[in-house]
Image (cartoon, rainbow, N blue to C red; front, side, top):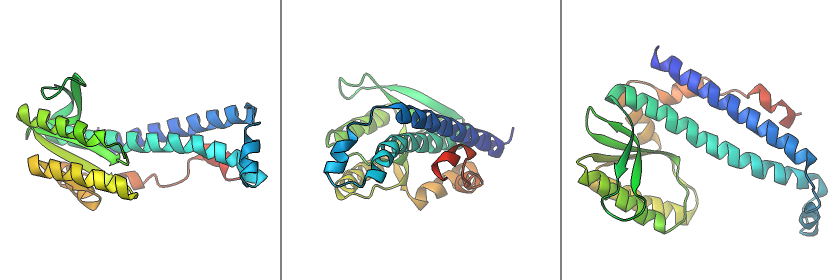
Length: 212
């Protein structure tokens, strides 16, 4: 099967799963106790917006989760086919926790350990230490660490953390962000990943109740 067909199948499955989960949660929320929304109104939120706040708080979490799942799985598919690879559990030889690091896509062809992020917006300072330890474990194992991140965060603190992580990856290996990330995957695999995914840039019918 052509990789383009595999990508389309993957994207359709994830789109369908997201739409189904969102609809299920919408129905759950309609049956929930909404007495807490009086606090929203006390805070000055218009009554017509209170239910929407709860709905989109839930929906937003799902969309972020599935956006990451789609891009990470699609990228892994492209890299794995081109580089003869897949996921890898790497022993943590640097610290006591965690016991192992998961490498999103280790490619045997060039001994690269790819870490794939659609967007990393964490503001946890410990995140830098964890990423540093992961990079050191990758290098100690004889692999080249490569970070692929398609979208930078927009908040200042998160940007600073990502810049430090990216600098560490570039010092020890490679890092690609934004347009560079799309270009890297295209050059590595020969697949225009963004172009393939954009073929599905149309509303899913499962969202029809949200746009009435």
